[in-house]
Amino acid sequence: KTCQILGVPTQSGTSERGCIMGPTAFRIAGLPEILQELGWQVEDVGDAVPAAMPDVSHSNPAVRNLDAIIAWTKSVGERAYEMAKACDFPIFLGGDHSMSAGTVSGVARHTQELGQPQFVLWLDAHTDLHTLHTTTSGNLHGTPVAYFTGQSGFEGFPPPAAPVDPRNMCMMGIRSVDQAEKRHVAEIGITVFDMRAIDEQGIVGPLNSFLDRVRAANGRLHVSLDVDFLNPDIAPAVGTTVNGGATFREAHLIMEMLHDSGLVTSLDLAELNPFLDVRAKTALLMTDLAASLFGRRVLKRKTRTY
Ligand code: DIR
Ligand code: MN
Ligand code: MN
Ligand code: MN
Image (cartoon, rainbow, N blue to C red):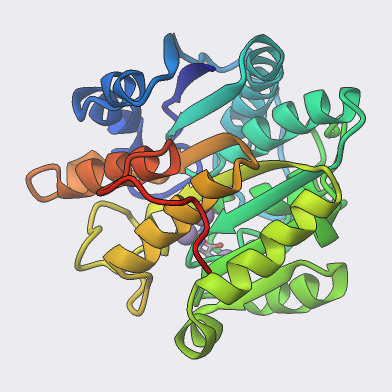
C-alpha cells in the first residue's frame, strides 16, 4: 500500500499566524516514519506552492486574503488530484482548514473518474460552511465545505470539478455554528452529530451508521480532522479553541474504527498551529491519531467485535 504526504502550509485563511509551521511539525513528530513502520510505502512529496495570485476583490468587505486562498485552492486541487491518481492514500498536512477546498475537490475529481461516490467525514468544532457572502469574520478557513459541495458564492474560484453531494457528508464534534451556517447545514442535508449527540449516543453508533452508508454505496471516504475537534486541554495548538470537544479516547476510537472499516482513502490534518503548542503535545497527539487511523494498535484484536 502506497501513501503520499503533501504539506499545505496555508495560514491566509485564519487571523492567527503559525499554521505555516504545521507541515514541519508533523514531519518532526515523525509521521512519515510511523506510517512506514505500520507497513505503508510512504513518499513525502514536499510542500504545495500557491498558484499565481489573481487580482480580485469582493462585495463583502470582511473577506480576507481572497487572492491567496484562490491561488492555494487552484494549486492544492491539482496536487491532490495527481496524488489520488498516483497512490493508494494521500495525506495532507495543514495548514489552516482553507486547505480542504483544494484537497477535497482534488480527490473528489479522481473519485468521480473511478465512477464511485465521494464521502467526507468532517471532524471539527465548526461546520466551515460559510460562503464569501455570509462570512462575518472574513477568515476563509470557515468556508471549505461550502466550496467543495458546490454551493454558490465563490466568485473567482475555479468551480469544483466534482462537487461532493452534501448528503454524503457527516460531521462530528460540532459545537460552534454561526447563524448563516445553521440555516445552510439543515437545508443541504449534511448529517451532523454535534457534541450533544456524542454526549447522548457516544461514538460507535453514529459513526457506524455513517460507515455502513459509505460501504453500501461503494464510496471512497475522505477524513478531514481539524485540531479544534479535540478538547482544548489535550489540543491547545489551534487559533480557534472551543470548550467541550472530543476526548482523547473518543478521538482515538474514531480513528481505530476508521482503520477497521478499510473505507478511508484520504486524510487532512488541519489547523495545527505549532506556535501555540505546549511542548509539541498537539502535534504529537494529531500524529498519534493518524497512526491509529493507519492501524497502530495496543493489542492484536479482531477488527470489529461489536
Ligand atoms: C467561524 C470560525 N465560524 C468563522 N470558523 C472556524 O470565522 O467563520 N474555525 N473554521 O476553525
Ligand atoms: Mn475547520
Ligand atoms: Mn474548527
Ligand atoms: Mn463566521
